[in-house]
Image (cartoon, rainbow, N blue to C red; front, side, top):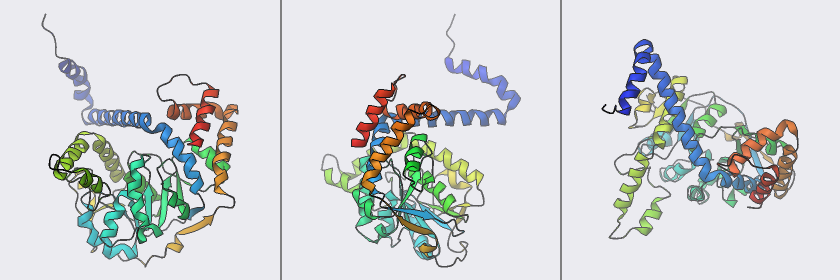
Length: 378
């Protein structure tokens, strides 16, 4: 008996459902596929960064000398990513920056400064040490005088101790316990895997006005992956030689990004957000991704007139009432105490074991306590 192709079996299995439910079945199936992709991507990310996130969190508590409170307004917000499309939007952003809030992913700050745009809020969520290369340039010019919005699991430089921080809590139980113990104001922004998604959610909280997206291509333009100048370009130039020229390095990187699959996951999230807020999220500048084909394109002619911004109307800086050097110790004590309380212990053990002991099914309480103390020591 001849073997039946496995793909044919799958087609036979779903064909009756397809015939009966048609578009609804296809829509549900696509949601399931997207969920599986996001879950798998999240699992792989946690495997690589779980312990580092916890270490970063405790280390960054030392930088909470100044925290930021915000007041929701109706002022327009321009959210910038570092895609190649940011370059085409820069002239418009430069013209409108006095009448809106510019919320910039840290990777886009260098291109904005080069184009004469000052970021009012710089957002950072990446836990990898390479992300510091995006943040260091913020302190070499006037861009560093704005507000920093950061998840405490991100990699942050010590200079952040001199900068007002808008603390972002990802909503996890363990982070909420520590921030509550420290009476630290924060805003809940779930982790989405990309800083631009977090930036859009933060923009929705800061303002009830329109949100304009720039530099969120979610795609690669030939071998160009980001707007110029870009923080990582110096790395490629420094190691380029006649055997591996800069253009070869750029080609390899663009190919990896295109085939990595992360762009598709981010694109699905943005597509859903635009569908939920069709009259609030707009595209500023050009984008080669079909995700933004239904987003209303916008330029300065239909942006509308807004009163000149005054950041003191939107943000208030609060200085720490005690030495931030004690925050780490207090945070560890709060977690250890919560592990002993029955109403908190199970949820807390599940979250922290997932980060600190990825893949292990059984993690004892004593082992978890030891790992927390080690993470706090860095």
